[in-house]
Amino acid sequence: MRISTSISTAILFASFVETGCFTPSLQTAGLSLARQKLSPATWLGRKSLTAGNFGLDKPAGRRGLVGGPEMVVSTRPSWPLFEDSEDEDDDKNTAFWDDDDDDDEWTEGDKVLQVETMNQRVVKMQYAVRGQVPTTAELIQTEINNGQGNWPFDEVLFCNIGNPHSVGQKPITFYRQVLALVDCPWLLDDPRAKELFPADAIERARYLSNFMTGGTGAYSHSQGVLAIRKTVASFIEQRDGYSCDPNNIFLTNGASTAIQMVLTALINSPSDAVLVPMPQYPIYSALLSLLNGKMLGYHMDENRDWALDVSTLEKQVAVARDQGLRPKAVVVINPGNPVGNVLTQENMREIAEFCKKEGLLVLADEVYQENVYGEKPFVSFKKAIRDLGPDFDDFELASFHSTSKGLTGECGRRGGYMELVGVDAEVQGHIIKLASSGLCSCLNGQIMVDLMLNPPCEGDVSYPLWKEETETIYKSLHTKSQALYHKLNSMEGISVRPLEGAMYAFPKIEIPERAIAKAHSLGLEPDTFYALSLLEATGICTVPGSGFGQKKRTYHVRMTFLPEEKKLMAAMDRFEQFHKDFLAQYS
Image (tube, rainbow, N blue to C red; front, side, top):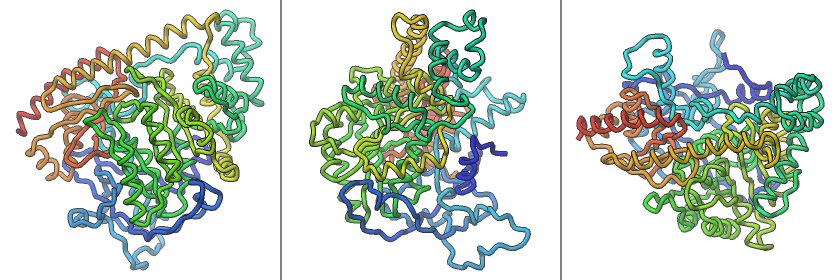
């Protein structure tokens, strides 16, 4: 049974249906889904996003029929980068579009919702960080928990996803104290509370409770509690040195919901396209597939520490327009996921100038802004455009932040925010309508946003402990990032660029030709074969680079450096031995 967090989520779930059709077996090949050919449409307009061109009505797609009773979603990336999607290899085991409507007719006794009759864009959608390798890892861990199987390790080390608390990071005390008090407001007037909670936690909880009629169990304003949006605006003003209007802030269930809202508003026809960095965080390819938009991948330069060359953007936009597509936005992930790079302000200035010239909105994914370990400082995209002067006052920007990353790591709270800058006022009204359809984001997540952005100050009772806890978390992340960087680069045939930010390494792996042939014989991408082999030999769960997008004939895996240091480095010793054995077997 799937338990939805709200009726609204359940309705969305019923409309799209979530994918989960991954096989854990190395012996089973994935079916590649046919990509629908759609005729381009023409779009004209001054702003990238106006009330006349954002996603209101989507053309209905044709239903696809997938052969075989056991459908397996391919581990291969499905996004076309202007490639012919109907090559001979794809046609051997792809879904097909059937014009015979009689085959699709419902008969008594059939399930109304079947893979053959459900939304085929959901079937096509892929999300690698919860894909085939992590699904296999979950099954292995279940076997270990049940005393089954004969695995050469005691537990799976889940390095596939940025989920800090699940691998040992401790919650920050002050944040949990305030949450407890706001959730149980009667404790605020209990004289015993002063024996259990510091005075500043009680004061903050009382302050926040004053703005939540009915407490955390009641709905808030659809954009979020105004007092917390004012906290966000104050944080942005202090960070960037420029004003911020709380009415342009949306408190959301993590950054993911905010990204989905903007893309839903942005994609109006199958010819609408968004430029996404390669490698990318796969929420963008997944949502664009679901919304029937086009993703245009622009590759960053691995040999230059994943630098972004604006000429690559220029080329992609030109090719897209020649294909009859309408590029409408550029995604910038800074610090980078999965590659761990940090953009310079000069690089962002070049991107901003290019987007202004071409009429493109920027989606700035900045959820790792606290996770910076090198010499380059984090600079927000908003600051970068504001520093360019009044010519950029009307620049269109949506930026995202989250309580799931940084030093907070409260993924399960689902706290995050979005700021809209320079967006058409009428469009913003429609985006508020989108937010209203979900009623509001989780109140505990909203509170966590307030706490993350407005922590205890020097002189407060809780400040010394907060400072100690956050510094310990940061130093641990920094230490592990460097240890992982050096360990990976010491292995034959593995290289990784400097880990400047975020919480991941994305090493390039030279996979022998015999291993590539073996992978293809199993219907797997070579890096998926490598990641599954690594998992079964060592218990380390990573994500194949093919799930993020990578240049042809290059292979990577993404892994976090979140687990406790001793466990992580012990696992890396097993990784090293596995890699030696893998090379010996297939070289």
